[in-house]
Image (cartoon, rainbow, N blue to C red):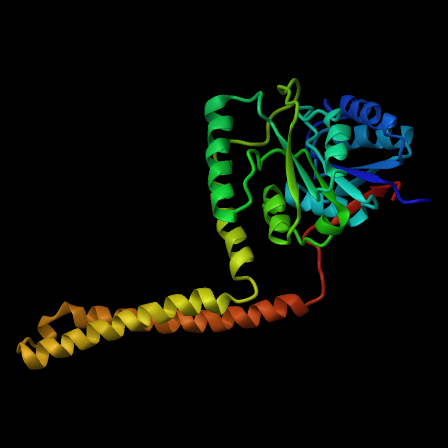
Amino acid sequence: MADPALSVLVPVYNEAENVPALGTEIHEALAGLGRPYEVIWVDDGSTDATFSELRSLAKARPDFKVVRLGTNYGQTAALAAALQFARGAVVACLDADLQNDPKDIPRMLARLEEGYDVVSGWRKNRQDPWFTRRLPSEIANGIISKVTGVPLHDYGCTLKLYRAEYIQNLRLYGEMHRFIPAFLGFMGARIAEVEVNHRPRRMGRSKYGLTRTFKVLLDLMTVKFMDEYITKPIYLFGGGGAVMGLLGAVMAVVTLYKKFHLGIFVKDQPLFQVSIFFSLIGFQLILLGLLAEILVRVYYDIKDKPTYFIREKIGL
C-alpha cells in the first residue's frame, strides 16, 4: 500500500460522545484533498466506551487506524505512539473534543506548502472560560515565547501541521507535546501561524484545569535546558559552581584582610562561614556538571525505549 500524503493523529481519552461526529468531520474535511490520507486514533486508556466507538470507525473506514494504550499515559505519550505508525509526509494533530475544526486542515496544509515546516493553529476567538483557561494560557504563551525565542500566540492549540522529517526525529517525554514548535524551531524549522476556528465543548468533560499553567512553567525549564545545555550541561552547572567558588574565595580573602589588618578575629566574622558554604556548593555544582556530562553521553548511546505500552492495534 502506498504511503499516504497526510497522517492525522488524534489522541483520545474518554471522548465516546465526540468520536463518531469527529470521525465524520475529518472524513468530510479531507475527502476533497485529492490525495491519500490516514487517521491514527490513540485511545489513551479510556475508561468509557471510547475504544468501542473507535473500533466501529476503523471497521467502517479503512483509512482510520486505532492504537489502544494500556493505561492513561497522557497526551504526549499518545502522540508519540501515533507517530510510531504515521507514514504521511505531513503530520497533523488535533484534539478529540470537537473544539478543533478539521475543516481548517486543508487551509493549513496549503500554508505549509508555501515553504513552511510547521503551521500552528491560533485560537484567536477561543471559546473557553476566560479566567480558568484563556488568561492562564495567554500568560503561559507570552512566557514560553520569550524564553524559547520562538514566538507563537497559542502554544496550547493542538491543531498543528508538521513536516514528518522534523517531528519524526523528536523524542517526546513527560508533557512536552505543547513545546513541539519550540523544539522544531531550535532545529531551524520555518514556522507559520494560522487563525483557526475554535468551538465550545458540547459533550464530555474537559481534561485540563488551572493547575496546568504551573506544570507548563515547570516543563519550560526543561525545554530551556534542552535547548541551551542538553549537550553541554557542564556549562550550566560548572559555570554556576565556578561563580560560587569565586565568591567563596573573595569572602575568604576579605576575612583574612580583616584578621591581619583590622584585628578582627575569624570567629567574630560570619563571613568566613559563608565563604566555606559557597566554596562547598561551588564544588558540588561542578561535580554535578561532570555527572550530567556522563549521563548525557549515556542518554545518546542507550537503545531507544518508548514510554508507553500498546495493548492493541487495529489496521496497523
